Image (tube, rainbow, N blue to C red):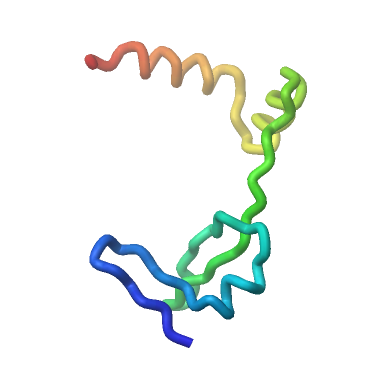
Length: 79
């Protein structure tokens, strides 16, 4: 099956392919050995609690000092 690349760098996937992923709106795109690999992604909110957010940060390797540094950096930028 062919997928067309549009002038806006978007790829139109064949209907038969998309029908295999019911309810999926997002795909993670990667390049492996000169090929484009799409993996379905289910978007889920991080927990609504502070502990849920802290767990997510821990999994991503983000330390509280990283957040402080990022906030300072963002606030130092001119609009």
